[in-house]
Length: 126
Image (cartoon, rainbow, N blue to C red):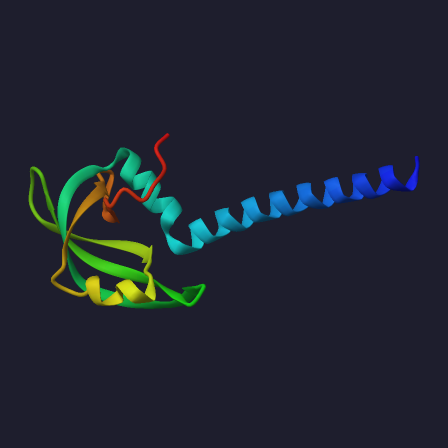
C-alpha cells in the first residue's frame, strides 16, 4: 500500500468516525433536551390546548439555551382538563414568549396524560 492510499484510508476512517460521533451527539442532545420524548408523544398523542402554568429550571443548558420543564394545564378536545408536564429546549431569545399564561397547542399521551408535548411542528415527518 502506498503512502497516498494509506492517507486516503485514514482520512476516510476519520470522516466516518466523525459522522458517527455527530449522529450520536445529536441523539444525546435530543434525549437530553426532551425532543425525543416530545416527538414520540406528537406522533401518537391526543390533541388539546395547553396553558403554561409554571416553568421549572432543570439546571441544564445546551449551547447556553436552557432546558425547561413546563407545568401545563391541558384542555383536551373531549374531556376534563388536567395538569401535565413538558420538557423543552428554549432559545434564550424565546424565554419571554413562554411564560405562564401562554396558550399553545399540545398533544398528550392518552396512556399517561401527565406526558405532554407542545405541538409546534418541530419533529420531522416519518
